[in-house]
Amino acid sequence: MRIALLQYPIEWAEPQVNIGLLDERLRAIAGQAEMAVVPEMFSTGFCTDRPGLAEPWGGPTCQALQRMANEHNIAIVGSLMARDGEKLYNRGFLFSPDAAPQYYDKHHLYASGGEAEFFSPGEERKIFEYRGVKIRLAVCYDLRFPVWLRQDKHNLYDILIVVACWPTVRIQYWDALLAARGAENHSYAIGVNMVGTDGLQLDYNGHSAAYDTWLHDIAGFEDYEQGTKIVDLSIEKLRHFREVLPQWQEGDEYQLAHKRTHA
Image 1 (spheres, one colour):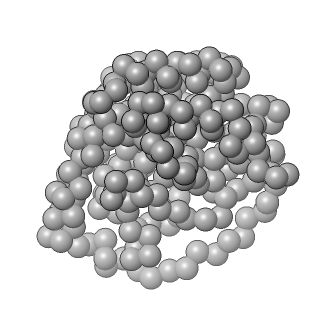
Image 2: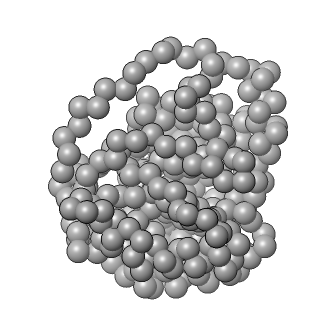
């Protein structure tokens, strides 16, 4: 599966601008990739203190994503601010051509960044499927919690995708944890982060990456690099690797206890 990693700045609190920019970037790679991954809250930036920017699920941003997926014949993965009933979610998504969207609500909310004040945590561990490939989506802070992302016989996936707004000051944790999640789960691991400066004057240097089964970063972004990198992942090679080295099957049995407070 050919996957495009889109590492770019996000225009703060400007949904229409960001949607237009994404449309241009997808048009530029038409026919070159089957899936495109964009940063967390791609249409607004990490505007956790602006709940008014949240749209109903199925609203204008969702409609634009579905249109782009159809027109450019590409699946799109990222997250956005969604209003669902009375609750707000940082909602991860996969929009694919001519198919119903799949979504996952971020489970671990970043309280230090104000996210837990307005947003509710999702409680479902979901596996997406696209063209026969199983995908686990995580949103930013989820990356710090290995049990939530742990692969087992009930949550088997081929690719872990993490979308983020992860600032430069803590980028060393991003680098270490993304590689670790891929290693411990015997999966491909893709992480897409933004670059630039946001509306709160936080700096982002990117470090988007795609780790193969041997923990080689096959995307190769430089610090602060803006652009698109396309990687080719062999699911057959991954499954053979798992047969030869089946350590992921030997993990301890456990059960997740949900003790979170809903916003």
